[in-house]
Length: 246
Ligand SMILES: Nc1ncnc2c1ncn2[C@@H]1O[C@H](COP(=O)(O)OP(=O)(O)OP(=O)(O)O)[C@@H](O)[C@H]1O
Ligand SMILES: [Mg+2]
Image 1 (cartoon, rainbow, N blue to C red):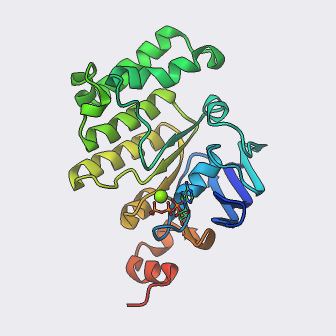
Image 2 (image 1 turned 120 degrees about the horizontal axis):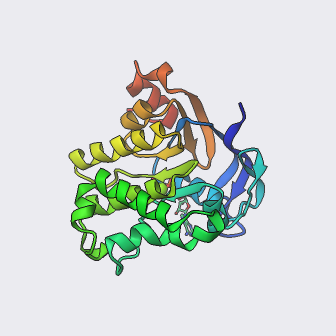
């Protein structure tokens, strides 16, 4: 079974003279949740941006479903079944909740061969799944709370039915109860067959939902393994991985 996503020797950065990712190798197996953890500034979001076409790797290759997608545009990648829930949010603030739900899929409706009826059905489904969004469907996204905004981003992802979803720091800044809800939506996405690359600062949660975890240090993989192998001594393992001595 080939990996759904594979990064091979990826080197990338925001300016010509500074590499943020340095020869990075990483895989997401089909149907799995794969975790990516690391200290602030390690390059986790840069990995997501390099896969989703916001940043062009200087060296190396990105493969999706066995085909090279290095430096493809986000629009083309969405059409191929990739989706990104970014760390800093990706909503249209001055559009309604319902427009935010519909717009991304409607812009690629014809290319993706999805009927209007199918879009209505999917939007109806997520309105059921996220009652708060149904209640607020006519409100502007800017009027939602931080937790509701994150739920809207998950609802948008559900409407896409992605094959691979990149999820960057979904629980950051959320109250514990909302964070739990967000992780439940990650599990739901995974159960519907979506492969997931998950970054979160809540390492315990990442290890709980992911089957395999990579540790990123200064733009390169410093450790990796099956998450089951270190659930027993998480504290010691993570300290060692991250090079923390205290
Ligand atoms: N747009 C940008 N322009 C220049 N440098 C950037 C840009 N975005 C990130 N960087 C730099 O790249 C490095 C990695 O940043 P990145 O956001 O990938 O880290 P991260 O692991 O996601 O951190 P965090 O846990 O804080 O989200 C940092 O040194 C950061 O300052
Ligand atoms: Mg980040």
